[in-house]
Amino acid sequence: MTEAKLSTFSAPKGTYDLIPPDSETFLAVREAIAAPLRSAGYGYIETPVFEDVKLFSRGVGESTDIVTKEMYSLTTKGGDELALRPEGTASVLRAALQANLHRVGNLPVKLWYSGSYYRYEKPQAGRYRQFSQVGAEAIGAEDPALDAELIILAVDAYRSLGLKNFRLLLNSLGDRECRPVYRAALQDFLRGLDLDEDTLRRAEINPLRVLDDKRESVQKQLTGAPLMRDHLCEDCKAYHEQVRELLTAAGVAFEDDPKLVRGLDYYTRTTFEFVHDGLGSQSAVGGGGRYDGLSEMIGGPALPSVGWALGVDRTVLALKAEGVETAVPARTQVFAVPLGEQARQVLFGLVTEARRAGVAADIAFGGKGLKGAMKSADRSGARWAVVAGERDLADGVVQLKDLTTGDQTPVAVTALVTTLKEKLS
Ligand code: ATP
Ligand code: MG
Image 1 (cartoon, helix red, strand yellow):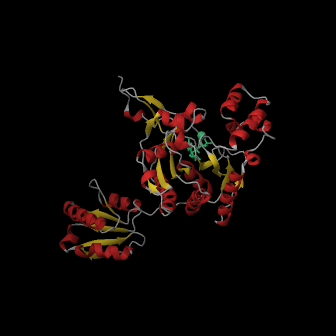
Image 2: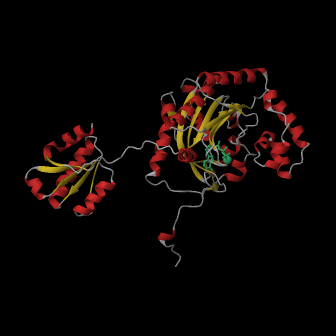
């Protein structure tokens, strides 16, 4: 009695299945995010869903929640220490370095990806243990236009979906020159606050992340905290100003958010997040920034880079919150209803021919009678039904029925596919 009853299985906690018709919205979102990237010279990359755990502990950062609390790590039978990828950037950079893309191609190497990511989080609306992102990385160039390009491409993707109530939050985290000075100033400030032990420890390891603390009690104490904005060196200030100017010129509105730090350790200079106001506390629909030090952290050469990842799950929720319908094409255009065995063979052949000619066609399966098959035709969303019995076939015709008007006309079997193509064009 150890065998579980099949009917008792359900998707693991924090995960969910993508099922038609909602699954179509997911595809539409992925497509919409990918399209602007493709036309801006980004090439598609796919990496394994698991990697050496050290790639993430080094690349994402030992002091981040992602690494300390949320990572799915495992030891294989062979003793390898692996982790399910919690994010995409470290893997993409690892793959680019491994393939020497930074040596063979022109810099920047521009890549985009789409896939599922894994974090052991407390599941709730908009927060899952397996979620989906589309991301983009531009590796090996330090140029404010590249930061601006990526942000504009994300905004254009959201806009193309019809999304309106999203906002762009923007900040600069400084660089190797100015951040250490700021970090020390912030640390001094934090040491004087009334914080719990965990937070004080975080203040020692990665004080910037304390700014990101969601608790009201902490945020209250942070008023008056020194801000990176006031500590940027001249280079960082000029760089940030150029990003802002390019965004403004492109008609992209943003809000300066001097406390925006984001969860990962590797960010430098430009940092941004997209938030949507219809999602409650899981409001971040996407985020990214510049990560000039990451390549060296994972053993590569100096390669200043910038990228983002947009959450597909939350973008779908945002579309729902705004009541936006993504244009999903009615899939089946023609539905075949065979009456009898001979008709089944002929119509199956015609359906195959129609599909090869680019007409989306389906047929009633399972020996359904006329009534059941016509119901299937209606449900399929098809505009046309092709009905045929022995008598029609003896006359060399099938009946073409317009499912919106109910009108029916005989069409020669040999002319069916051309007729359908004409009617559908
Ligand atoms: P949050 O602050 O909500 O935890 P994050 O800063 O951890 O988000 P990123 O690592 O920047 O998120 O990932 C980019 C995007 O991926 C997020 O803006 C969000 O849309 C999505 N995302 C991240 N974690 C999850 C999750 N557990 N479930 C669903 N989507 C997620
Ligand atoms: Mg998170």
